[in-house]
Image (cartoon, rainbow, N blue to C red; front, side, top):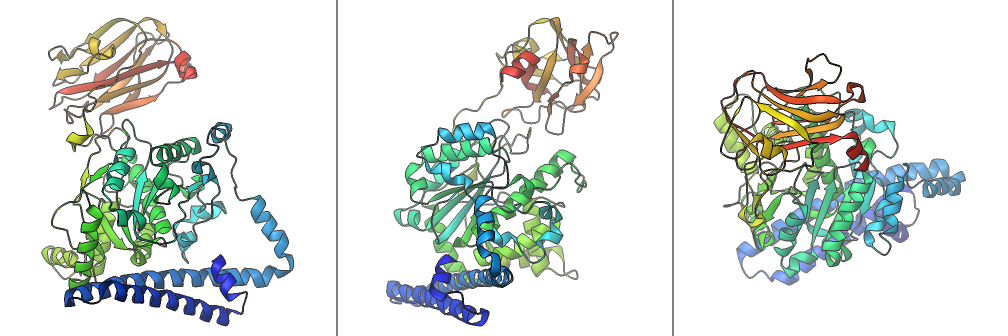
Length: 556
């Protein structure tokens, strides 16, 4: 925008728009001439691919032009209405570039980032392309804070334009983080030419600024050259970007935990898309737990060029058949899907929204399901094989264990030890398998493995002395025995003053996890137990037993 103003000046709207059209046309002509010089039209099919590629670039430039037109109109209106006090307004903007208080721990962390590019990420600007004409009616919570669309953190790369933008959303995972492995595979799979015309944007979907800064620091330490030359960026939204996720309607028969997770995932997806849509001709949708084939980008470009000739009206290309991984969009088309998700982000997960969006484009109510499927394939061509493999075992949905495991990742933990308070005894009705006993699991030596729990079966942990417990975690199932979880099972405590009656405090969720904090009002406990409320069809694994006292909670 600054360069456009310098070239065109503060002219009346009609002259300014004409000047901008001239600039866009000049850029388009430059791209066209450069393509002609490179190809020399050695073959007819090469000519067709070149024209298709030029068409994609033109659509991208047109989308930028439309977006800038909106910015110009809004800016001109502001200039004309506030010309008398322009200096005052700019001073306010400069002095309030951040509308949130930086926590002391972040300030301390910033001192340790002196000289690193990651330190500049707190200087952010609003994402104007999230501001569609009716975004505030679809997402009314954004009106509560003027800076709701301004990133809380943005480590900028400085690249103005790339051929492909790779979007990687990441959040704090329950156990393992796969982000650095994913980045290593993606970067090493790029050719020298790809490194110069690709942009990787990491979206950190967390509002804990200290955590976000730490991710940016890790990325810069591991990939300093690629951060310096603009290949990798890191961005994170403001906390006010998210609505109240505690009052969502339940849909699709999902638990509240799953509804909350998929709703936030949808919002993360469109935020990342909104930022990326002006950064390159194409947008590649990935996740933070994948590995890629070597030279994957070359295969993507060749297939895209060929498909753009044979099927010019494609909406996205599929390079992996798992969920939302490996989907390539034209950046100019992203605004349609972003708006669609804004309408239905509370209703279904992102991969279902993709399918629903395609169906709404090409399916009619008077046709069969098979006919609809064929029509969708025409606008979502699939590559012959997957270029990306999912490696994540622990989902971003807390407690969920995924069955996909990659041998290159190495050995994965089957249990997680804790320094638990001493016990007087352990009682259990569940038959223990081999040496996978409850006692050894509590001591952090292995996992507990029991045979088909029955209704009324318990595992009781009796403390050596009355002990005040601040928090607990019981995780069932592991990467080797995903289905061996506690189903229909409660967590109960026995306070000193409870007259020998255990008190219900929690139950295992659909992923076999029970985790929470205990109120001080319970006082010291004599025991804590797990009680099965319905016969199970499966064996059960207890891969994590963690009981934290208030003293240890303060230290951590």
